[in-house]
Length: 389
Image (cartoon, rainbow, N blue to C red; front, side, top):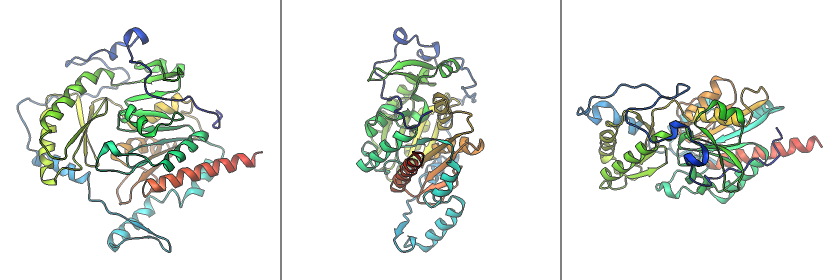
């Protein structure tokens, strides 16, 4: 595969996916509460909770989980003369110790590139907290023009995809680049290049076209859950509307309940409302992110499987000469880190300015260091190509 060539532009759906237009598989039809049969072991079996019995938020650990997934920010600032510094010496010491386990991808760049020699790099990235800073209002998580330029440039040399918990349409609105592949809803809504083998292996993968008329594969493994997700969305919007600062976000195949701007004494109320709604939907599950509760279908699909799917779509899966790199900052990115680590396939890079356990191998401090890393990749690749001339 020629990594310098332009990749198939990937945009949002050109037109609504309809049964008549695309010959939709039966699992894309409206859901029933009784459930349908999933192929390839995608549906997880979980016990149905008895209705009418509600566990206390505090005793069941929901509030503790919300707090542990949203620790207070600890900022480590750069010092020109000494690398890093912090007004809290204990925090700085913990961070330096943590760096021994998860070394900086910038400081280790030469080592990474030595391993990359003779290999084809495929790049995967989260959006929030990776390409854009975490902000109070999720609708304002804009990436800088410099970051957009860096992402655009790196996509000229390497297949590049963004895998986000946001809806695919929303991520594209933020990024606005046609050179990339986009996967929204934690990988449950993917547009990728057309490969016949992928369509054959995944019944929920159907042919579509992007806005430029290019043929693409549209993969939505949780499509039948869409009516259910919309029901939950409406219920959560209604029951949280009086909680100051709470925001319910529609991410198509998942719902995000943000409590970043909610007074901490009301976090348990947010968790209680989410728990009340979810008890009626045993086929949906809850995951925790940074000051966000995310509701998504109980299917065996996550960002790690999305990475594998995209590698397969690109014809790069199970190839010894491919080096996937995944950069992300949140708990949901751990599934992708784990896939790369367990298969010894590539490198996970955690974006964090505070110590935390991870399946990643390397680390970067914040989006500004992510941008430096992307620019370094471009310089390395361009230098490598010049040396071949």
